[in-house]
Length: 338
Ligand SMILES: NC(=O)c1ccc[n+]([C@@H]2O[C@H](COP(=O)([O-])OP(=O)(O)OC[C@H]3O[C@@H](n4cnc5c(N)ncnc54)[C@H](O)[C@@H]3O)[C@@H](O)[C@H]2O)c1
Image 1 (cartoon, rainbow, N blue to C red):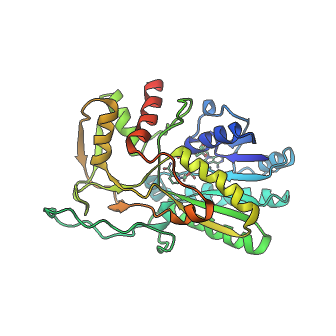
Image 2: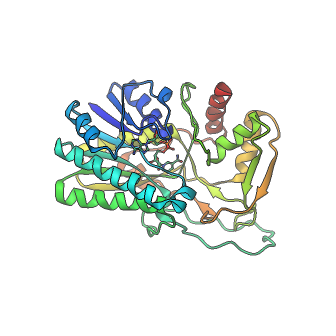
Image 3: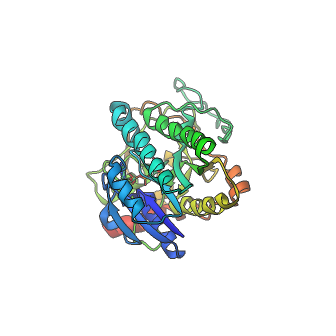
């Protein structure tokens, strides 16, 4: 089976290329290296190109016979998407449209899409006034796929638009697709060969670990007045390799299931920022200083997945369920790159 990994020089796509290669798939990575890294492409062939370049896409599909496409390529900074929505709609929506049309011309009809919990928007209540209640607050219900889809920023909207496109392409052209709504990807390749490296880095765990390695990168915690037991945001952290395993399950699923499908991917456990800092302290073996700064707009207090649909339909379950184990894989990578 010959799989095209679009965005395979990026964090999650590079892990996917490694796993596909190790499982015996033929792998081609297509990436414009806008946020990805050439040296993260170690498995399979590499074609440098842009989804907005239709000539390049046509050539790619004419010179390869792909059986399926996995699409990780996107711009994914929420703040940047608010400041420059034009770039986001062009890259994430038009880029995907070009990719789907290039596939269609070659009769390729299996597609796995990196969607996001951002399609749900802000499913919970606004910030309360201080003081926080003395007793722990009730746990918020997990987010399942029946939650309403109300993205609150252009990034999330581009993900929802693509999901809707996939639905329409299934109806009209018989495209078979699986959209995987990731919660917070975390961790790194357990062999230590690749890991997470974004610039700027907006994700919590790499920022914590960078602050340990470089005192100039002092850790900032955005907001301590949320409606959560310790006042900091709660998120669901899922190991990058568990996300990749779900993509393999999606390939299997599409063998017997036509149409467009969507699944949440998370660990079903929420951790506050302070809990992540404490777990990181256990991993790195020292106290991690931090300072509070203003909450970021549009950061919901709690986002935790109900992944039971993926468990039932894709037969997928995360293997990395221990938070410190997830952080340890990331720490091994950060120690290596310094
Ligand atoms: N990292 C997370 O926690 C998370 C959570 C939810 C969803 N996602 C989604 O998962 C996917 C992968 O995320 P990531 O963290 O690996 O991001 P990343 O930025 O590390 O990787 C994206 C890759 O796509 C490439 N790319 C972007 N636009 C392109 C274009 N027009 N043509 C060719 N290549 C292009 C980039 O160069 C990069 O290598 C994205 O679609 C993202 O929105 C990520």
